[in-house]
Image (cartoon, rainbow, N blue to C red; front, top):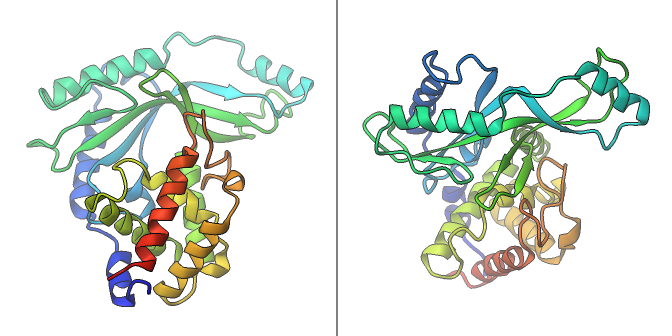
Length: 300
């Protein structure tokens, strides 16, 4: 039967951003204060997640903020030849004296001092509950800069890399991700689809909220990051003027695709896979797609 266009149009709308903006701006100012114990180090603060990617819905709550240590970084040289590897080590002969563990300790202590009683013990991120200073809950990801080098022509060539972040999950697994590249690729996809991509992501997310509310999907089974990645694989031609036609095109393509070939939105790694701390478990992906298809077919 499918879902009526009027309902899809409602679900496609972006959620409010004012309270998010206020929360992020206040948190950014706090993290960048000169009195912070890590203030003498080089770092950057930036946004990630649904609000940064303009895919937020009214069901989204947490403000995702990244604080990234840049005075030291992690890297991979797997794509370099022996001479390029030699050039890299000549350009960076030293070792770090202040690492990510020190940085995370200092950021956590500072946030506890600024928001006493509202900061949870860090796992993957540091969670700050809503309080008199922050109108929305926030997650602060403390990470180090990660550089995936594709060249190093000489000792002065320090920009031939794809930039990302590295951190550890609550189990101690190293996670490498590319949030800024993810956001950039999502914007590219949105432009290539006549502004249809982000609207469709929001429809998928609102359907996911319904599925969770009705007990048809587990909370946390289909994070927004994976939904954005899933839809980034759908051919541009599937996104057309009407939401109902786009949804039908997308659901059909996703239902029949080879899950093993799907890439994350940033295109640096596979989206779906088991025994990986960064990939979407196959069973969760399959159950989400099936639940979406069933919900579409049985809409009343």
